[in-house]
View 1 (cartoon, rainbow, N blue to C red):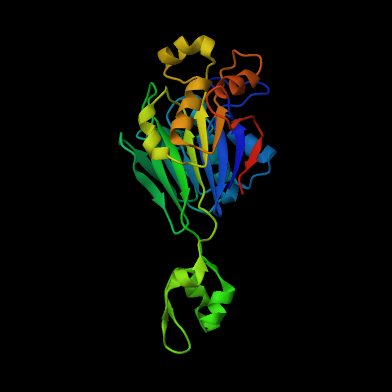
View 2: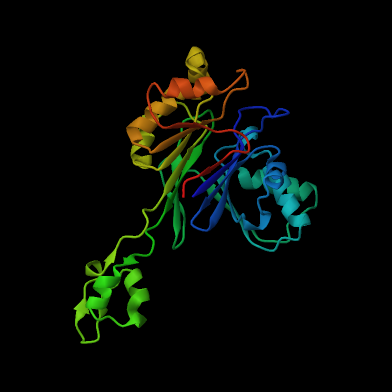
Length: 302
């Protein structure tokens, strides 16, 4: 599992700071999460292949999280994309995108599917044989969801000594890795767990931005491997977090601690601050394993 931060600052893009967007690579999928202004430039800068992006997840309809979307869709068209594109986001996102494409007479030459969200409860919105994606209802000034990405159980590993002792034909090895019981050469049914062991532990990633402190998301993200949680403000501006429905670094750490996350990544920093090191310092008073998102930074959790 690999996460590339394309932008992690709030509100307005600046010369060296980009608004929210990130790419998650998980179990052969490449998911784009949010698409702030300038996202496609960041994708090129970090050599991320456009044609691998088939699913885009938009948290909410504030400009710093989706103003780059129409431009990216249009660029895909100019590059003669043929692969289907799925967009997940709040109700209204289809209207916004379609209106701009209509007025520009720039309809896509590939299928564009919108999955508009309205539920205030967590729901499964994407699933295949490798990954599933659930919404994380957040509390912001407009309807907002975070997203939980979870790998499914992978193939089991063969205990070769046990397999050979059980006299199992090699033709059944694949079925064993898939979790099935099989028949050996003598016609005896061999229980799967007697000759295999679990594969690599499935990984998970939770994206939570934008939101104020919201403890009821903890059961949804319990035991998550990596949690990205917005931390717009330091404690000295906690009153602004309440007013604007954002969170502080310390509040993000409390969520990570309660969820028993393995790693907390902070982001969505207000540009009022001269640097970001203080965010980590404040969070580490509550939670030990804290990382700072930075534009262009890649986290590899393989």
